[in-house]
Image 1 (cartoon, rainbow, N blue to C red):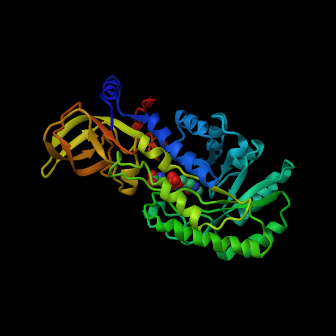
Image 2 (image 1 turned 90 degrees about the vertical axis):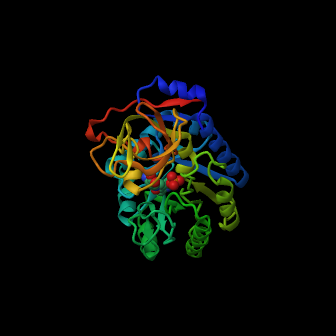
Image 3 (image 1 turned 45 degrees about the vertical axis):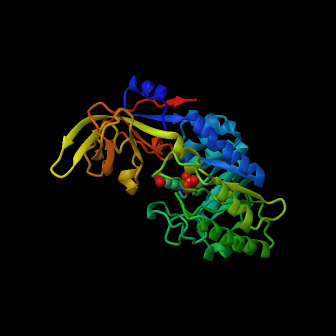
Length: 382
Ligand code: LLP
């Protein structure tokens, strides 16, 4: 939770703003780093979860690489000091301009999601006389058992290459001399809380890897993506995320050849809990059936509740009155602009400071200017 000294700092600032607890971020980073060293895993942080430069600086210090999904993310990573050989570029719709830029920067590898993409990368690499390293993103058809909007590893999803296409992929690759296949990439979804899902993923990856080795194709690295979930209901609960169980499952069930590298692209589990959206109550409004606490943050600052019906825990940082029920809503002209219905808060009044928790991942990066909203600078504590 928040120290009194931090809350006093909040009082002097214009709301809404993102607050990041960098000490907590470093706790997560240290846990992940320790386990990655223990099991000899490599981490490429998924920049899409939070590309704030101050956050990236801490992640860089932890020694992780960067997983990027746009030319601008590649640019951000490189400008923030990530060495090009630690940068990966994924995504289903890379444009020629983005591919050219990544080639120019000599990034480590492209995670390829279609046969046509392989052909285009080959052609663009040929133009600049390079051989680009690629990983194939394969759709393993494993159910992540999470919200359907953030499920990516089923046949019906647009992501990755289907296993039935693999013979054609291999045939095509043989004719492409400016790309080199070095890895296999998987990412089945996000906010995964059922750890058995990761065991299932390992078993499927083992089968797919064997398919390649049976054909004499050596895979240098296996990339298992991200997806580890966090506790949105109890943001202060320990551990920050269940990194121990997560990595132990891969260490136990993923079959790994000598010299084969294993990569992960964690995003949410590293940054979610260190961020909160700090807001002020603008009005209390008594509706017919409910009381509304109208706050000055909205779906423009944190889109997750409106987009995925997700709940982020809410604290009133000012009041310690009697528990009272409120619908906590934002000022945006949309009925989905609601952070929670019938939320019990200490009796709340105009001007109270409100913290919307676990907002460090997919919060600030998904902000929009809808309604021509102001955007305030983030605030950090060490
Ligand atoms: N690798 C790939 C290929 C991905 O697509 C993603 C996330 C990650 C890694 C990182 O996954 P994580 O460890 O963060 O689960 N906006 C949604 C989440 C979208 C996730 C997109 N891909 C949300 O707010 O829940």
